Structures are given as structure tokens and as C-alpha cells.
View 1: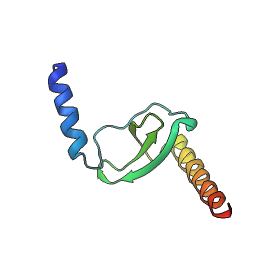
View 2: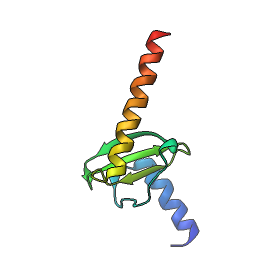
View 3: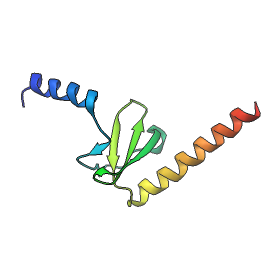
Length: 87
């Protein structure tokens, strides 16, 4: 695809994207870069990690490092919520 067509496709995709992962990444994402995550069940059942840069990366939920990251993000989020309630 030429760069202009790819740019157009990306803009259209961003506007109308559904929570659908067409491909899953095999690259381990450093935990410190993961801001949040959400589950998707459309197309492929996956977890989508949102990272500091704003990018969203689809990963396989059954992968050991993914489960560990999810647990740690949950704990981080719960701790932050508890701290904000006690301030």
C-alpha cells in the first residue's frame, strides 16, 4: 500500500475501529509502559494493552507474561484508587 493509502486507511480505522484484534503481538511489553488494558471478544479473544505512548497492542490472554501484567496493573489500579480515597 502506498503511504497515502495507508494513512487514509489508518484514519478511517481509528474513527470506526471496533474492539477487534486482527493480529496478536508476540513481543513482551515492559510492564512500566503499560497504562491500562481491556478485553476484547470480537474477532480474536484478546487483551489490549494501552501503553504510555497511547498505542494499543493486542496480546494473547493465555500467555504467562500477559497474565502477570494484568494482575500487576489491577493491583496498581486498586492501590491508586485506595490512596485517592484516603487523601
